[in-house]
Image (tube, rainbow, N blue to C red; front, side, top):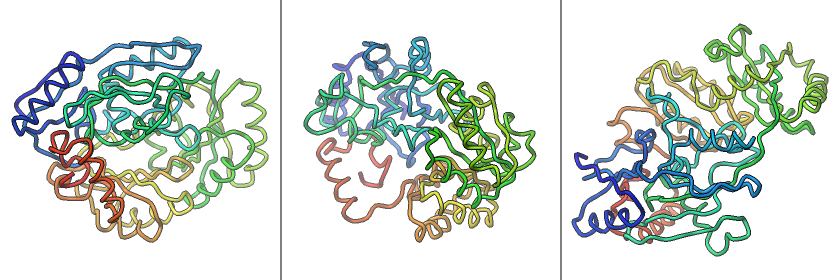
Length: 403
């Protein structure tokens, strides 16, 4: 990938893709490059660098809508909406630290291309659920527009959602329109200390199923909690329940949860500053940034099945922690060997899917980085690729070999 092609606007993106088609070249679609090591390792002829497509083109706080070019840094968007006491409710993860690169390097286009989400995912959804519209260039070299700037304008095929999580294999985004939401006034986190994984999963399920509007639920085994300053002094495992809103409401709901869960273990709580730091660490999997040479998996499964998966992986020397009420399991192995067969053998009867997030280039080229597709889903994925990128120009093989 010695050639780096840097279009300055959508018209130049079209020209670049058409050139690649005519010359039989392949393109690595990238913004800042903070997520380049996600997905299968591929070799392409050139990089389609979209980092020059920057700038907010519309922000109407009263309408809860923002449009920006795809290369706009997410940190700028977060700062802008925070100035109006708003937020990206789905808490997009920052992948930079787990790959050993600085935080804050992601872009708006990369956010939707990888369908990012954080601890609020069970209640707020992921990036795809907040995408209202987009402009993009397909692998045919055709610019297209989908969706609109308000929810009622999203008619016909919902391409923003369909293209979310496609890792640049179907189209190169040039501009996105997303929903923003009011930011909670403050937050606290209720802690339950000393629970094992099964008890933690049960407590999280009870809390999230209650009337007390828990916006984040995670379980940190003792060795993981020790790596997060906000809870390191606990000296044991920590089950974390986040409450957001106005302070009187939080105090009332915390008291009710303490009454409901007090018999399960010793209780504590974090005030706003430490609570914010805790959930940023959970969001970005910061306990697994100390040794980026170790293989790292991100597994979605049924919350009550997660402790069984964790126990099996710990027997292989892995470290784990649990987000999304236990439905998301981060698994770091003791070395660079991904052990894909062992993990998927355990996961199969439990249900769910595993994504290899961090491994060597050789491992990511040889293994199924994403959950293997069944015949029907595989045929659908191939048809989408054929429709959007029949010449296999954009990120060929990034998700699945040959697609």
